[in-house]
Amino acid sequence: MPVLLEHLWYANVRTDLQTVYIALFANVANAAAIRNRIVAAASLRGEEGERERNEINFAFLDARPITSRLHISTAIYQALVAADQGSLRTKTVHSEILWTLNPSNNISESIKRFGISSTSTSLLVVHVCSPVNAGGPAPAEVAQRLRFIIRGDMVDLDAGLERVTDWDLVKKYYKLQTDPVISALSAKPDRSNREKERELVNELVVSAVAMKCVMS
Image (cartoon, rainbow, N blue to C red; front, side, top):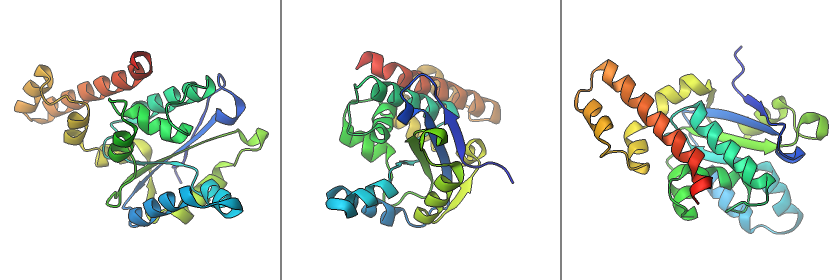
């Protein structure tokens, strides 16, 4: 059975940020319920609120505007560095990932564009935590928590993104519709040009994410 829950480790940030789990879900049937749960958890108080917020302590992203493993990994790394340096623009490292993906600095727009919506059918889920040897959850525990939360199919990250990425949406969000090279490739949509266009779009959006913290 392939390993569908990605497990990344970063040694150059503080301990509670060193482990990152990533999972892609397709055929999601309960996005509206998940989103409502996230909203409700924010207003719960006391032990119940803490417990519920811990249960859903993930970044829930609509997968459609994510172009590649490098795209999401770049956003994650930028968010980790911001958290490590105490320079988050948002409340948590998970929400910072959404902010980092968005070309503008508008936090609400970032959540609207890249966060889970009531109609999302594919979700990219990220969890940042300590390593197992420092008290963090093991991969099996994270996978089980996600399967309790999400009614959908956990799929391979790379192959899954190839199927769910909405390239027109990506070009809209990153304002690439009028790029002359991309427009020329789009005008002749054979297989070769389509692949070249997607490679170029991916390069541009990854660069935009990598440069955002420098430019902001």
